[in-house]
Length: 78
Ligand SMILES: [Ca+2]
Image 1 (cartoon, rainbow, N blue to C red):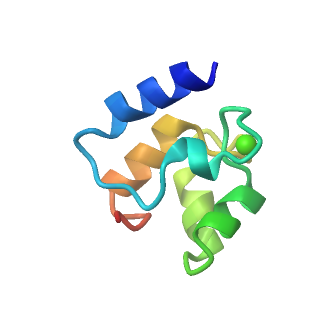
Image 2: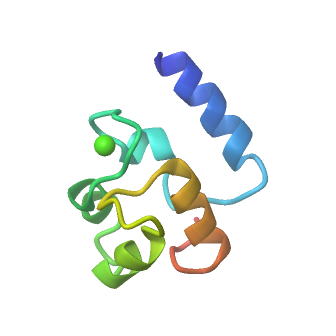
């Protein structure tokens, strides 16, 4: 499972710099970034950025939502 996640992460982020590796931010590896995981990984990022990035308003960020947020400048890249 972990190898699959890492492979997907490498493929997804090969063209985008990223504040942190998704699998690293997703501490419990449930495939979604909780507000707690988000703030732990990016303590300097305003929580409003999390809400803005959560486009389906699920309360967590999917890998796709995080990637989109970085591309849109909501979240810092690198
Ligand atoms: Ca998680």
